[in-house]
Image 1 (spheres, rainbow, N blue to C red):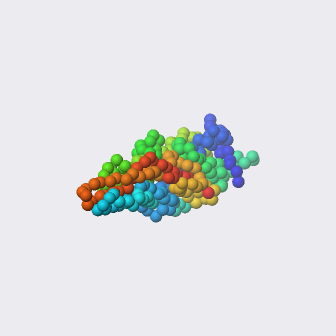
Image 2 (image 1 turned 60 degrees about the vertical axis):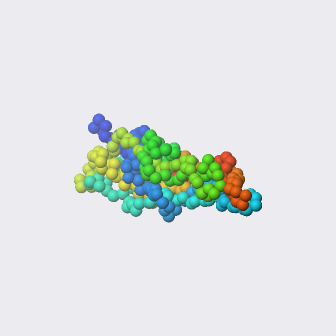
Image 3 (image 1 turned 90 degrees about the vertical axis):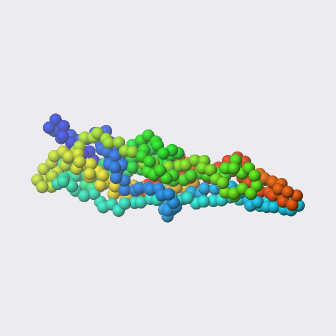
Amino acid sequence: MAARRPLYYVGGNLREMSVAMIDEIVAQVSYQYSLNPSVTLSVDTVNVSPNIGSIDDTRLIAGTTSSSTTSYPNPPNTTTLTNNISRTAQTIASVSPATVTSGFTRPMYWNGSALQVMSDQDIKDTFIYPAALDLALASTGTTQGGTYRIHTDTTLAGHTLVSANPVYEDTRADAALYDTTNETQDQPTTIQSYYLMKIDGSESSYTRPIANLTASDNFQTFAKTDFDTILQEYIRYVVANEAGYQITYDIAATGTGEIRGSGMTDTKLDSQVRRTRFVNANDYRAQDVPAGSPQTIATYYLRINQS
């Protein structure tokens, strides 16, 4: 099948829509998806089943304190603590194919010799598939409304915070706290928190096509609410179900798909220093603690995929 040129009323006559008019409807499809996405992400305070991937948070922790009655001992080295974080979950709604509402069937077009009703495939080719492709682009404008990105703060213009709980927090050992021996082994500080944002949509001003009425075999211009409903039903179904247009997300350091928003960096300090303490002539203590400069271990990304 192929994209069609739907008909509309102007000055009491029927005209074929221009490409610009069709593009305005495509933009409205994106807006309708933003109001009720069929593929959603959520964030919990604890780990969930990692159905879109997980992130490692690594940091150095101090070795245990050693003591000797004769001289400063050689204590255990610092070690790396790794916590696997998977707080983000994906849900794909169970969506039925679009249905006819309010007595209308579908838009109409001129086939070269007569008026003809657009088929389901015509509607998808003309309005829905272009919008579905726009939704999965790397950009994060209103035509990606209802899809997601990562941000380093809880506010971002044109976006809605999904949860005050961060997707991921990069932690490192707080070297300033390890100032003596017999320190608590793990003394972390949060370096950066990363949050999930949903992109806001924007309603498009568009020209409504004509449609035939099932009851009278006549036609008239779609009511806006009816046409918006049809557009939303189609895009929700296509994004959740149709091969080539189905959207899914994943979080990983490497992978396919378009990166959405900030990379989430896992860092840790790169060395250690030995702390010693002379208690008395029979008590010498030593402990290796985190020190040095931060190094990037890995950077993880939220990606949007279409397949």
